[in-house]
Image 1: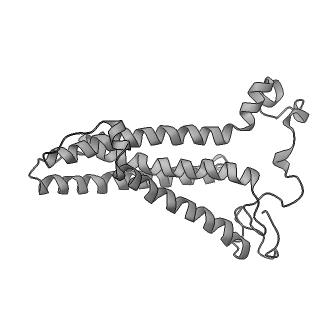
Image 2 (image 1 turned 30 degrees about the horizontal axis):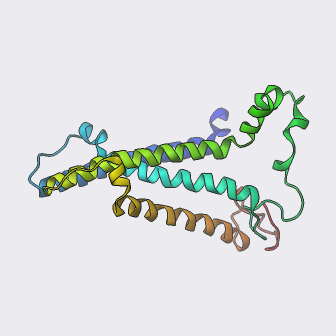
Image 3 (image 1 turned 90 degrees about the vertical axis):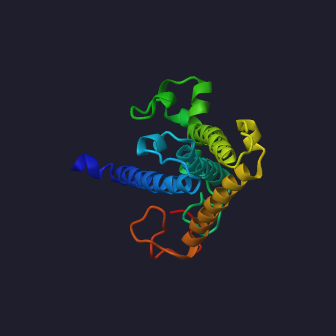
Length: 220
C-alpha cells in the first residue's frame, strides 16, 4: 500500500486515462456504426474499430494538442513570470531550477547525466522534459495527419469523391480546424490555472499557494 501511496498521483491519472480511453472507444464505435448504417454499410466489430482510422484520428488529434500544451507550458514557465501566480517562477531572484547542475556532479543521488554525462549530454538532459513533449507532439501530429487522411478518404469514398494523401489532408481546412479547436482550449485552460491561482486557493494542492498567502505572492 505504501508503494501505491507514494505513486498515487501518477497512478490515478493513468487509471483515469485508461477509463476515458475505453469510454472513447465504446462511444466512438457506436457512433461509427450509426454513421455506417446511415450510408447503408455493414457495421464494424469493436476489433475492427480499434484499428480504424476513425478511432486513430480521434485519439491522436487530442494527444497532439495535449503535448503541444504541456511542451509549450514547460518552456513558457522557464522564461516568463506572472506576478501572484502559483505557477510562476520567482519574479526577481533565481529559482532552484536555475542552479548549475555541474555543481552537483558529486551528489550520489543526482541523475546519471549530471554525475557522469558529457557537456553535450548534460545540456540535452537539462532540456529533456521540453524535448520529450515536443517529440511526442510531433509524433501525434503526424499520426493525426495519417489517420485523418485515411478517415477523410473513407468519408470521401462514401460520397463518390477522390481519396487524399496525408500531405493533401494536411493542406485541407478540416485538418487545421480539428487542430485549432483543440489547441485554443488547451491554452485557455493554461491561462485559467495561471490567472486563477493568483486569487483562488485549493488547500493541499501543489498547484495552489497556501490559503493564507497574499494575492501578490508568486510561486507555490
